[in-house]
Image (tube, rainbow, N blue to C red; front, top):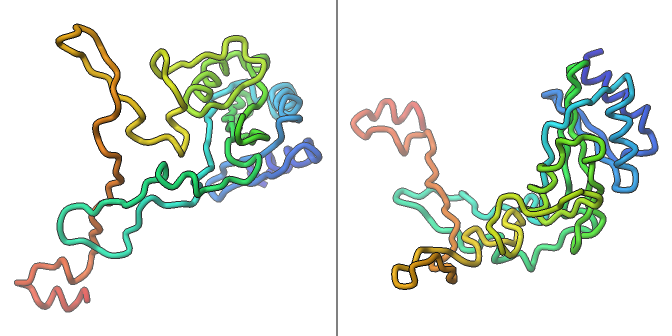
Length: 236
C-alpha cells in the first residue's frame, strides 16, 4: 500500500465521525472536508497525533464557489482575426447565480508533516453565505495569522478568535473584497495623482469591464500553407 492510500485510510479511521468527505486523486493529492464545529478538534489531532504529525501550516486559501463550473466565455467557433469579446462577465450575472446555503465560501488549509513527509489539504465551508465565518487556527499554528488576514481581506471570510483580524493587502478605506466572484475585475474606483490638487484622488472607474476571448487555433488543414496541397490533404 502506498503512502497516500495509507494516510487516507488512517484519516478515515481516526475521523470517522468528523469528516464530510475525503478523497485522493491519481496524482496522490489528499483532500478531506470537515465542519466549523469540528475543525478545531480535527486540526489539533492532525498536529499532535503520532500517525499524522502535521507540524507545519503551509498556506490558507479562501475560495468563492459562487460561479464554480460557469465559464465567462466559450470558444465553440474559431475566429480568423483579432479577439472576440465576452458579452457578460461573472460580475454582470452574479445576481442570477445562487450558491447552495453554506456552500459558497470555504477556507482551505494546506498542511505538511516534516517528520513523515505527508501533505494534506483540508476544506472547511462557512455555514453562512451572507456572513462567512470559520474558527481561527492561530492557536494551533501561529503562522496562520497573516494567511487568515489575507483570506479575510480578499474574500471577506471572518476568522473568529483571530487576535488582530485586519486587512492585509488592500488600501486603507477599501470597500468590498476583490477576490469574490461578484466583485468586478476593474473594481469600483480608480486612483490617480491630480496636478491641480497636488494629491492622490479617487474617482469612478473610467474603463468598461470586458472579458477577452482568445483566438482559437486548431492544428488542421485550415492552417496549412496553401502551397503544399499534399500536406493539407494528409491533415484533413
